Amino acid sequence: MVTEPGQPWLTADELSAWRGFVRLAQRLPAALEAQLQRDARLSFLEYHVLAHLSEQPGRRVRMSDLAALANTELSRLSHLVGRLEKRGFACRETDPDNGRYTQAILTDAGFAYLESAAPGHVEQVRDLFADALTAAELRTLRRIADKVLTRVDDRTG
Image (cartoon, rainbow, N blue to C red; front, side):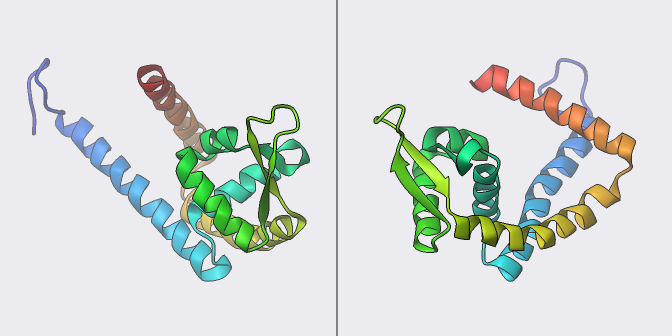
C-alpha cells in the first residue's frame, strides 16, 4: 500500500523489503533446522547452544550468559540443556566464582558430536546463504544486520 509521508503504512518498497526479510527469517532457519534434524538429530537452537559452548573458555559459561548468546529465555535454555545432558553432550555445575549461578559445560562427547555435525551444517549454510551472495553483499548484509540490531537493542533493552 502506497502512502503519503507521515502515514502509518509502509511504502511499497518498505513493505516489499519487509516481507522479503520476514520470509527469509522464517524459511532459512527452517531449512537449516531440517538438515540438522536429518543429519545430526539436533534442533537449530541445540546446535547453536553447543557451538556457543565450544567457543567459551573451558567450554563453560553461566546459563544466563548462554541464554543471551543463544537469544533465548533462561527457562527454555534450562530445558534444552537438560535434553543435552540426557544425551551426554552437556552438564551443569555451580559456578565456582559465584555459587548463585549455574554454568553449562560442553562435555567431550558433546564437543565430538558437534565436530561431527558441523561440516554438514556449514555446507548447508554455505549452499543456502554464503554462496548466494557476493563478498560485497555479505559485508553489506552484516552492516545492515548490525544497524538494525543496534536499534532493536536500543529500543528494547
